[in-house]
Image (cartoon, rainbow, N blue to C red; front, side, top):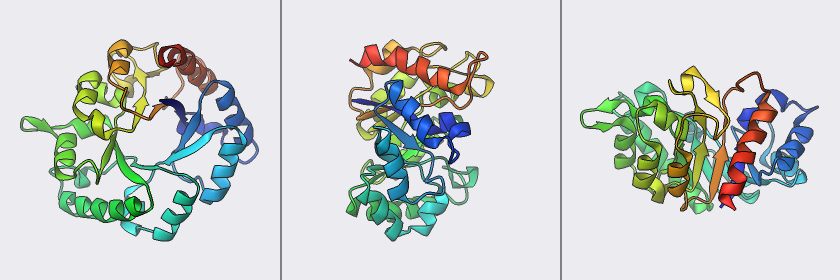
Length: 250
């Protein structure tokens, strides 16, 4: 199991002048790889080189529903050639979620995109937010999405903070969907939830002993902190998360 940083955490330091240094600092914190929130305007080959030059693995790139709609197989070829294994969909708009008018269309689009990704050795995942946990009868919108699309078609990238914020016990959720979650987002927050404040992993309210026990099937654990907290800069927050996790993953 490896530790990554969702580099969105350090997005303010990814301009052309600072990106190489930011990635070197990420490696120095103890991270093994970075997950990109998109291609950042780079070609996959260019972004992979910048990442690897810092000693980090280039393994996962978030995509949008627009990427799914476009289904650019040539771009998929270029990402696969650089070792990308996972393509998490970052979020879906309300009309595309379970109960929305475009839900069935969205499922069909994901099926088509996922087939093309699988041919190239990549797997599509879904990164949840709190709004995905909206109740639909005795279930949730996220459960409905995973019921409509099997694990080979759509894997999971659970986000612990958003699960907690959506009223779900993260450890219980991981027990339920861990088989389809090769990458897990580790994110901490204040008691009121992520929209009220984020925290470095281990310094918020989430039960990390319980959560980490349920992460054993994952290949990558990926730290993310949407905004820095407690007067600290984003680098220090990312470092604190690594300092908390590395001994627990040894």
